[in-house]
Length: 188
Image (cartoon, rainbow, N blue to C red; front, side):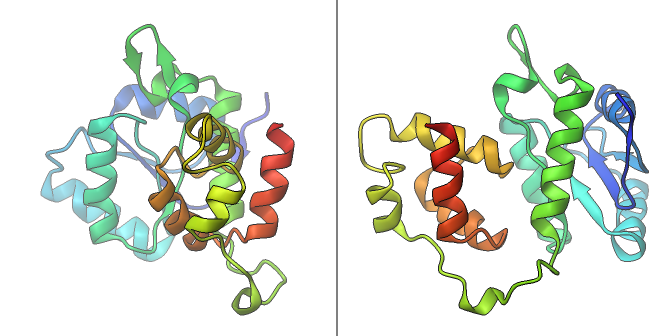
């Protein structure tokens, strides 16, 4: 696999994550070294955020979500890359370090393409999904909705979420109801 080149800095949790991401891409990678991010690391992340932009890429577990929230509160314009838990699993261990370079490159590529503000279309006219739409599409309140929602979230690269969070993420990533419907068709 050829490494992808990424101009933004990628913020991960630890040194094992750094090694895994380095196998997938050529980019500046910054490790937080867990939840207790040092003052120096905050300064490095802030510099990268201001000069290059950052991609937050944490483990798909509780600790990873907490670190992501902490980073997001300080860097609201950051791009978010997500891995599906199954792609990051090695037995009971869940982490980016367990994913293949191809899966990591795919997650980062999806995050970048979803974040691009220049999509060549007028976002103000885009129709976004609401709770009723998710229900009608079988992504909320029906048998199998959780599994379908997980599959669609994985395909779209937005990370697993409940129905309410999905509505926010779809709008935040600029994914309209048409794109959501297309993704749903692909998983059927």
